Amino acid sequence: MKFSVVVPVLNEAAVIRDTLQSLKRQAPDEIIVVDGNSLDNTRTIASQYADHVVSSAPGRARQMNVGAGYAEADVIVFLHADTQLPDGALNTLRDLFLSAPDLAGGRFRISFSNTSFKYKLISF
Image (cartoon, rainbow, N blue to C red):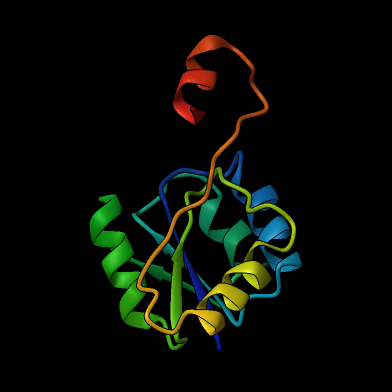
């Protein structure tokens, strides 16, 4: 089972390197970054890590759809530019999909390094 990861971006130079480095350690079959016409270094940084860096009009949903159109894998994972998956997450997903072929979707429990009340509430 193959995994494509789609990351929509717009002016994410400050965070995209860490996200993509972390994602590469997960060894997805394909990383697709969809740039919504960034004005910073996002595209240059992304091109060092992604299999495909493509352009789209801005808008997260639009960019996700464009990325899905490029994806060639069995499963598409959408990831925010400032989000890192836990170690082994794609292997866990692969195991779940293989053990439950009718599975159509899922989500991750999120947590933040910032421990203020607002972030605790979001991750609850």
